[in-house]
Figure 1 (spheres, rainbow over the protein chains, first blue to last red):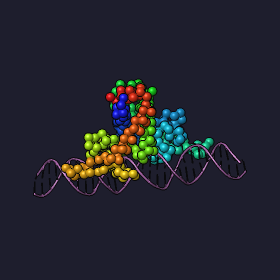
Figure 2: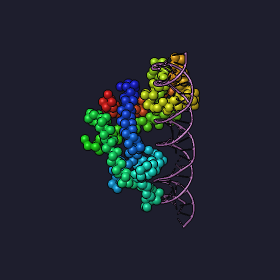
Figure 3: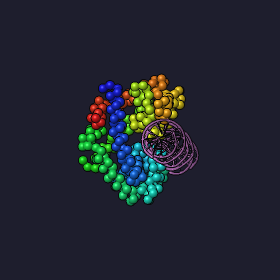
Figure 4: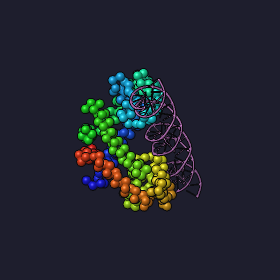
Length: 137
Length: 137
DNA sequence: TTATATTATATGCATGTGCATACAAATAAA
DNA sequence: TTTATTTGTATGCACATGCATATAATATAA
């Protein structure tokens, strides 16, 4: 295992990852005018018990800074055909903001989820999926 | 293999990839005030026969748009302690621009390369590396 | 040859991002 | 209680990026 071999494995991994990512992002942008980060935010809201999460708890999930996430929420509140999420100040801690997934948001995230799965399935073989699992577990 | 399983494998892959990427990027920024894209550009120049490449040939390698790459070259030309690369119009096709890696650029890319390798080796086990190879080959 | 289409790069512009900071609220210390 | 510190979010700012477009050079068609 020399240096070039290690590095070129890394480059290949990046290309592999970016190819999948860009395909998803392109599809989402084309269909919903939303990107993968918007998807992640709504996905974690949808997964949550009460369809809501604190802004700060979303930071590590979505993988953006606090400031980027705050503006991402604003964009989803001002979505062209109606709000997908809603801010609500936590009455127990008025500094904190809960982000709620709205009805329209639930519809959109369901459609997005299907597109994401289609995109992944169309690009990954059964063997790829096994190899990914082996790598990340 | 249900949908959630597929998607969560994808999320894990992204986290795996981003963790490595951010570690590299952070180290490069800290030490050289340069990012991973700057590294890639110089890396491919260093690999090339004559330490030069056409701007358009770098586009698919580095993974940026033409415009972003053009400005990236400008930044490397104006590096704080001296130019790392140099533009030179191709005399055979005056539309085309060759990017040359300068002496100082060679020094910097060598140091960067070592840091990148250290970063990868410190974060990846032998098993990880094998798994990556299996996934991307 | 002259006119048209294509190709390579650079730049104006809009947008998304992180850092630093501001502000408000909650907690800890005096 | 009053003051100081910490915590959570929002915003000004600088900057990297992609798209659309401008400009120049080359290739193709008439």
